[in-house]
Figure 1 (cartoon, helix red, strand yellow):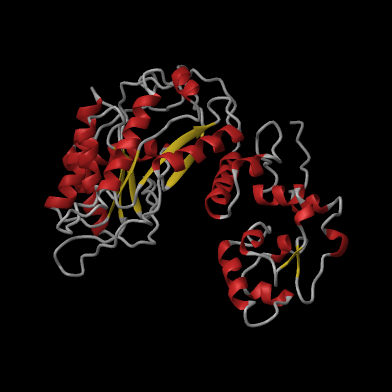
Figure 2 (cartoon, one colour):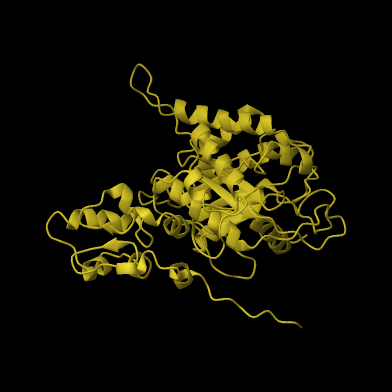
Amino acid sequence: MSLDRKLAILSDAARYDASCASSGTTRRDSRDGKGLGSTEGSGICHAYAPDGRCISLLKILMTNFCIYDCAYCVNRVSSNVPRARFSVDEVVQLTLEFYRRNYIEGLFLSSGVVRNSDETMGDMVRIAQRLREEEHFRGYIHLKTIPDASPDLIAQAGLHADRLSINVELPTDRAVQAFAPEKNPVTIRAAMGNVKTHRAASKDRSRTGKRPPKFAPAGQSTQMIVGADGATDATILTRSTGLYADYNLRRVYYSAFSPIPDSTAKLPLIKPPLMREHRLYQADWLMRFYGFNVDEITSTAQDGNLDLAIDPKLAWALANRDHFPLDVNRASRELLLRVPGFGTKSVGRILTTRRHRTLRYDDLLRLGASMKKAQAFITCADWTPGALTDSEGLRARFAPPPEQLSLF
């Protein structure tokens, strides 16, 4: 099989793996002439698509052959999809050539499991090691590791990769046992715990003051498939909260289950809307940066699922109108962060500016606040919402208009 054909198959197969930005890793560059590539703390990594679009992260599977038969996975052993496999040399060659052509900033590498976990993980480690030590590649590398692999191999992976990720697969252990019985949730958690331990140890200085080698400096993340089982959004967000706390994760990625036409498919489930995935990301963001907890976000949910018509912050504000309107010239940061249309940056600017003068409506616009959402929930020197905050039609201002369904 030609390299182009392999790339078309394995880059397409990798679209089900959620990638991430290179933010959080250490800065490296090759301006000293001693290496190749660079990574910036605020860099954004995407995928290189086989249709020729130029994007910044080469996101591929090393192979889509797999010995497992996970019911939700397009690459399961029983799936009727074209198969391909890159060699170690081919992945190294592709990464370097794509970088030299200014297509990418780094590599996102995942893989199906061939023969056994150690052999597959060993090849992935050799790819990262060769890029770093032989080719002196200083760009971003994200390895999606295999939890069943030897802890020594995962430890080696962390010495060469900026970020490691180990998939928890599904929101509950029961779902994993039902739809991926060959995978063990206990083994997955143990592998994530080992990564956390190695990262902590890499930050400790020896008694002589020397630091050990960096280990996955951009941290670890995980991916959770939503919609393949019957877990509610409340269950999913509760699980995510625990994962962040237990393993110091940088991100939990939510991936909407997408069944494909396949005679061997085992899950006759309706594909959830991508909007559900989007709402979960918004709720996750509120928990991480806005001070919300799971109970607050899901208190407005019907049957444990988020409202798809409006974002979770707005849904909370509409259900808790007794907290509003807030005076932007006096309210605390914690309360301002709960105003729909106010982001962390705009709240920071509000707090800084109001030290010097009283804020007016136009000032809030200049500071970046989205007043279309915020105006019903705040007061300032020249603005009061009056009865708007408690009006029955307030939700209708933000929800999308109903659509006439077609009969044909």
